[in-house]
Each structure stands twice: as structure tokens, then as C-alpha cells.
Length: 430
Image (cartoon, rainbow, N blue to C red):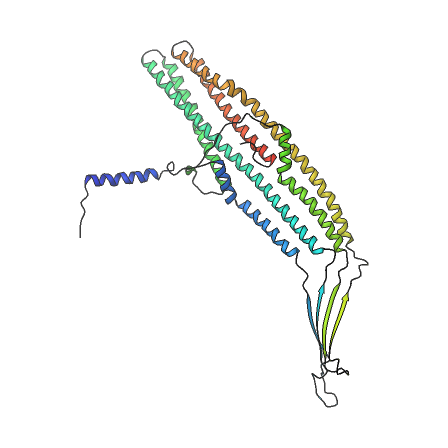
């Protein structure tokens, strides 16, 4: 048996490979970042609620085949005249038997099959529109969770930046204390203030983790939280189209409104079908008879035809005609109510987006720069003895509040933009 001697270089290489495997096995190395488009595609492909509702659309499609089926013909066989007792001592059981096979078929008039098929097809269209509406609402919830995750990430980044900035202030303060330029009590107050920054960072990290968990739940994804991340533009767009443009978009794209209008159309078809079902459907029958006991030797085999027509004296489908006629009005009222709801949703969402923009514009144009300028100016003045410690701490607090308020406003804008997308029926604002 050959033995390979381990050299120091060989051992070092093994340890390096092992260390690399351990480091890459950490969650940060395996973390995958998803864009909004990737999250949406993953959701549409994996969400069990959407998949179950898609099967319902397929079931409605299968009912179209059933609706267009013709009535089955009826076959019957009659045998009669068989001898069951001897006649004058003669036993001939099959001598007098006659056999009658009969074939009958119900003929449906007034386009009943065509109307049933049309009603089933319209039912499939309604189910498809309702499926799109379900997807619209679920995507809104998904988009809201995505925005909350982006907002939580932005707040975490801000908290880390503020903590890093404040640690530099603490280092400078300690240097001033050692040089005798800062009192012990002032240094203690500055160091105690760091607790707030640590608390802000810890809270932000917990909120980010919670937002990721909610997003993974909507995706029906079992990926560990530490290996899941999202990326996107956490900002706002200052451009907003007129309200009338969003009204027209909603009328063209809202699937719930389309389903309501399709229900009116189906109700009209069902009324036509109810009227058709009140008409008379004849049954045509034909039969062949073999009779061995006939006195006419040329009539042992005969053919017969008949037509059966029900007399619609009492039941002419009056109740169903009246019900379907009323159902047309009911669905029309529901469609009008849905249209009014569409306008209300668009108006409300548009107002929220516009309100967020009115608050965000001065932050971008003035407040953010002012907060940085005030913080840096007061910090410089305090370091050189031109400002009090209270002024310095207040400037730090004001900067943090302005930055946090801005991030919350951006999150509110993106949530309102998602609400407007929901009201319109498609993504018009990112």
C-alpha cells in the first residue's frame, strides 16, 4: 500500500479549501436578490390560490362541451306473443312471438343547443375575467409586501450610516477629551446617545426580516430568510398623468368591470334560452316488427314511424322566463355599481398619490439638503467651540428625523402607486 506524505503546503491548501467552503456556505454568500419582475413571475407560477382558480377556468371550459351535446337516442326492444302454455296439446313457444326493436330521438328546436353553448362560453369568459381580478388583487398585496421590504432595507441602510457617522463623532470627542478640550460629562452624554442609534438599527433589521418573511409567505417559498433578498428602485416619480386618463385606463382594463358586463350578456343569453326551452320538442320514433303469427304471409316484417309532441298547455317555462328577465336587470344594476366603484377607486388612489407627491417634492428640493447642511454646520461649530452640546445633539436628531420621514413618505408614495395600479387594473406607476 502506498502512503502519501502530507507536506505543509498540501495541508495549507486543504485548510484553504475547507475555509472557502465554510465561508461560501454562509447565508450572505448564497443570497439571491430578486427584482419586482422576478418576484411577480415567481408568484404567478407558484401561488396555490392562483393555480386553484386557474383550474376553475378550465372546468368552466369543459362545461362548454357538455352544453353542446346532442340528446342521446333511445333504443328499446319489445318481444310479445310468446306461448306460455300448450294449445290443444301443441307446444310451439316461438311460433307466435313478434319482436319490435324501436329507435327514438328527441329533436331540440329553437337553437337550444347553440344557446346553451353560448351561455357556457360566456360563463367561461366571466370565470376568466374573475381570475384576472383575483390576480390583480393578489398582485397588489405582493407589491405592497415588496415595497415594505425595500423600505425596510432603506431604513436599515440609513441606520447603519447614522451609526457609522456617530461612531466617528465619538472618536473625535474622545480625542478632544484626552486633549482636555471636552468635559467628562459631555463625553458621557455623547456616548449615551449611541444607544438610540443602536436601537434604531436593531429595530430596522427586525422589520426587514419580518417584511421578507411576509413576502416569502405570499410566494409560497421555503427559502431561508437569510438567503432571500430583493432589489429595486426605492424612489418616486414626479410625473403624474391627468385623472381623466386613469379613468379611461380603468374602464378599459378593470377585469371586475369586464366580468360584470359579461354577466349582463350571459343573462340576456340565458333569457333567450329560457324562451327556447318553453317551445315544444318533438320525439321521432321508428321501429321494425317481425311477427311470425300474422295471417298475411307477406306482412311478417313491417316498419313503423311515429311523432310524439308534448302539449305545452300548463308548463311553458313561464317561471324561468320571468326569472331570467329579472336577472338581466339585476346584472345591469351590478354592472352600474361596479362602474361607479371603479371611478371611486381611481379617484381615491389618485388623491393619495398626489398628496404624497406634494409632500415629497419639498423634501427633494430643499429639506434633505438643509438637514445635511445644518447637521454638518452645527457639528463643525461644536467641534470648534462655536455651538453647545445640546445644539449638536438636536442637529443630529433633526437630521435623523428628516431622513426617516423622507423614507416613510417614499414608502407611502409607492404604496399609493400600487393602490392606483390596482384601481386602474394594470401597472401604470412603478
